[in-house]
Image (tube, rainbow, N blue to C red):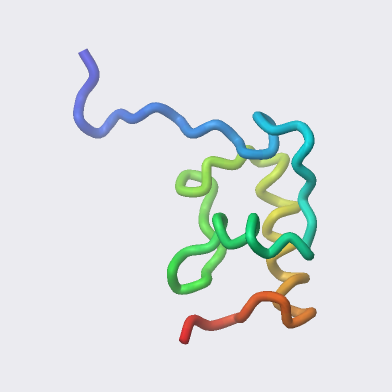
Length: 74
């Protein structure tokens, strides 16, 4: 019997979809991995594995630097 606080772990988006590639220019996909305040979401919320969380965080930072994603929510 499962308790209320136990949930099924999320599957990593990039592991389940092998054609998907982490790219800083793909802002639509990267928006799924930031909070409403545009902070990078932790692994427990985003559902990414450690192998893909690192490049996604780097891609978000690079997209911000290039002006593709904002640093702050308006």
